[in-house]
Image (tube, rainbow, N blue to C red; front, side, top):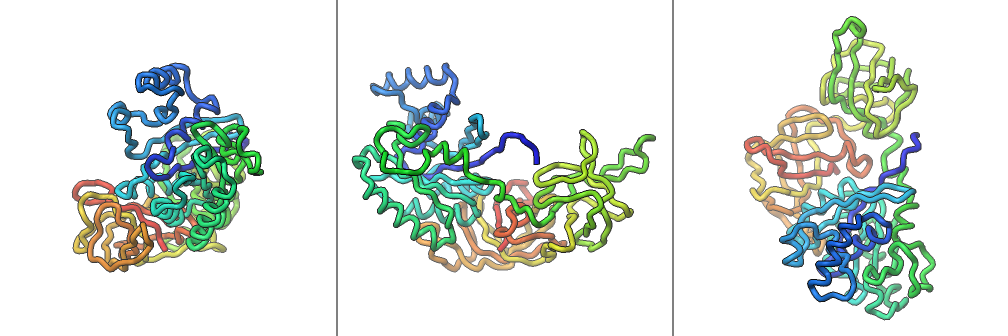
Length: 416
């Protein structure tokens, strides 16, 4: 594998006023990831508002209108780096009407930081955010118990919150949970340990983010290679070249390996693994490469190369958990377009099994879905799809649904 600095994608989720913006501001400030002019601008705004200290939450509330109203909307992505790792933060809003924003941001995240106000403990919103994190299979959870300065840095308060949260997370099948007490306002246990939480033996938040192992977050066993483009240069030099270009979504491939092309089921061997910088003997997810085969096979965009020892499903019908993203409700009587890896097919919703109440986790029967609804659905597609369950492979188990008339993305799905 390459020695490039690893990228960790994480989201932050919490209720209103639990200090999420301050926490992200503190991370950026204390890790020296903001510019002097940014710091100067927020210092002036803080002074204008009559605050004694710099309001670090202003770093993340980027839009002027948002700042004036004092609210945070939509998903804001922040980028920062330390010598150990690069980071992308997806800052997701807390309200229930932004469920779709959190689903979108969490679907690519390695880790979720779920923020709790130590004075209020585990809330309905905490449970909802945790459910969404479990739904989109975020591999690692950090429970950040913030505002510890407001409860006298009480270990008993922290322990009680953690015990309650762990019990709930276990019901959802989330077992990789790390609880960290902190004060984003004071700076305790965010980047530096601070002086007030000596009873806590674990790492500060940033150190945990830098060191958590994410090598196994991608499926390394099942080779999945959706073909994006068939390359025929037709030049004198390359007149025999027929390469299948794409990105390895999971697993690895070597020159000489036997592969199966799906959905046709034809087989061949890998002749070469070509890249812009020359040929490789071996390639891994998520590298983008071109593969040439020993045999001439009819392969087109949307086909998938796999290995016989770990075959995916090939079917025209499947069930999925779906998050409806559109303001227009789902119409089960009409066709939509489904995009799965590099394949685009027409689809129908054959039935809605149940809609999930994201606050109570109860299931309700329904005949339609509205924006932010999450439901268990059954679907049919016009041509066979090559897929895994989302639990096994996030790349080949996810899809989006597009409205044929407007070309808008109306839903995101996870195959069960």
